[in-house]
Image 1 (cartoon, one colour):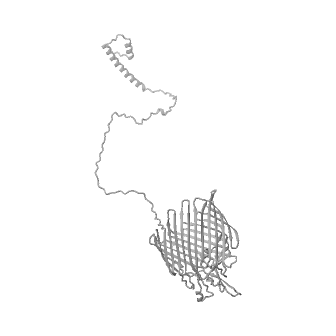
Image 2 (tube, one colour):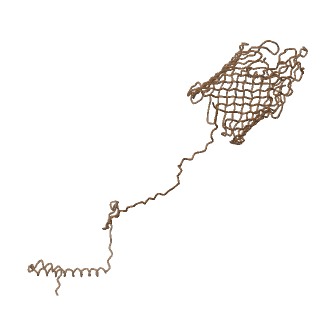
Image 3 (cartoon, helix red, strand yellow):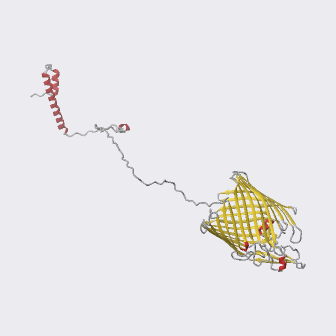
Length: 605
């Protein structure tokens, strides 16, 4: 069989015109297809055989390195297409709940925020009354009431009474006393200011019972002495305070005093304060006026009376400087004093400088200052300090030229505090009490038996050291102690009469339980000097003088109380528990151990 190649076959088909349509043509096409298939099989088989021959080495030159870019990457579709041709339909699921009621007794508690427990503050009552009785027929009574007129106004009443029927051992004259005072006040508080007015009266009775041992008086002479002295006092005053004004505050008070011996005294005392803040500094100016007028019906030696009138006016500007731990107050005081009875006037200039600096925070603060003052003495102040003065006193102002001091204070721990100070002062016309002489044949007054005191003046320099310690043992127990030592230098007098060389005090308060409480204090007053004098009719030796040293003494006082409730409490007080009949003043012993029991009731109307 003759085999034609595909080329020959094609040429023949193209060049032959003998092929015609019909059965012959179909058979020829079929035969040509078979031959073409055989040709392709033989060609591929030959290619495989020739590919097994070794290939020679060739050099491939890279014209440009491949640098891929973002455009070459295919973006992944967010929702890719699914190639699965089978789509399964989701079957709808239906749920049903079969509820069955169940009986239950559980009740959930409502939630609430946790609060901090606080101690309930004690209720404050507007009124209270105290009444107590003790030995020596002692009576203590107090009544206070604060009536609220409206939201801004209050009316106050305060009544106090303290008395004793006496009974001091060894005393030959009556030694009873009583002291009663009534005070009425009216207060108003507004948004911009507050003010207060008050009126009051006071009645005091004391006896000059301190007869000297020598010369001794007979019983008949003692019976002729009436040692009773009554003091009367009425007063009225007021004060005002402004909150947002350069005029800061002002107060004034007028008092009239008198006694059973026709002595009388009027005093008007007023003070006004102005404040201004300039360049961040506080400037304060105080203006004062103190006017005293009085008279004594008699003098100690003779029957001539004594009148006095002093008018004192003062101006005190000061600058307050605050710098971190430093507090500095720079001030000066001007005073003009007029003695109208003697037509004498004087100008005074005093320093008013104080400073403090925190060296170690609350642990140590150093302070110091130098200050002066013109102090107007009054008859009222003298008989409040010494009830046994005679109604024949000399009244003069005291000129404290300066009082310089340095000290340190602070807290060593949260419960232990201290204060220590050294001072030196210079005073002109300092007032001192000295016993009046036994005036034989000079006067027959009931206070002229060596049983009263006069006031003398002298220029005195005083050096003192003061120390104080405060201890808070715990919330229920506090303790404090202080002491001060004095050294005096006089100008004319032999001694600094009745001025102690040492004073000390110890005070303790203890809250035993919620209902029980107690406290005690003991104080010590050191030795004092006084003068024993006897005026006689002998012209050769008209007066006999002897300096007497009064012993120092301790006085222990204590109290114990029990609170039944917020309103009612009972107490027991003890005074001079050491039972020491010491002499506070020469020839004037005090009552021995004294006990007083009573109750206090608080209430609201």
